[in-house]
Amino acid sequence: MRFDFAKAIEILSRTPDTLHSLLSGISEDWSHVNEGGDSWSAYDIIGHLIHGEKTDWILRMEIILGQQVDRTFKPFDRFAQFQVSQGQSLEELLRTFAELRSYNLEILQSKNLTLEDLQREGIHPAFGEVSLAQLLSTWVVHDLNHIAQIARVMARQYHEDVGPWIAYLKILNSN
Image (cartoon, rainbow, N blue to C red; front, side):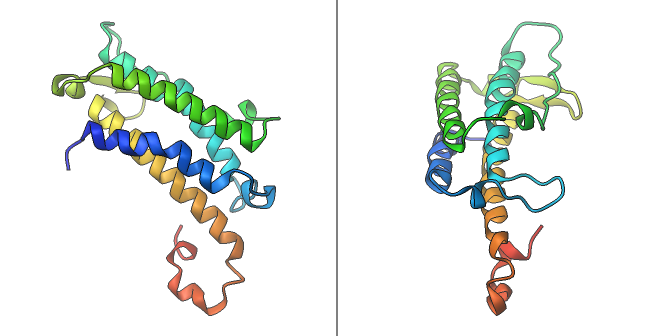
């Protein structure tokens, strides 16, 4: 399937409500637990999504659509949330994410992107030339990836408790 702007908006606009429904009001036993080591909790993931709303998707789109000669993206700090989110409650993070996403979708929709715009390119620091359609597609899949990650991290809390049903629970048998 080729990138479809309307379908992308369907997911991007629903992510904040999806995360709010899943996470709002739950205990820290659910929201702050991770899978061990350097893995992320639901709380960490929401902070990461906020950082992306502030420093990634829209800024990179503006670089691609802009007139500047240098279309190179600044590297994205995938771990900034560990400092930026400190001291904030999960409820605050969910609210901030929803506000930023709403604002960013207004900007995105105001661009009235054409097929030509979607084919324009910027320079990713690791991947080289990437199109706006690829960037926007990645934004959608990034959301879905982190929703799945949150569900997996939460499900693993009952890994030992499901007994023999683990054979039917793929979420507990995947990485």
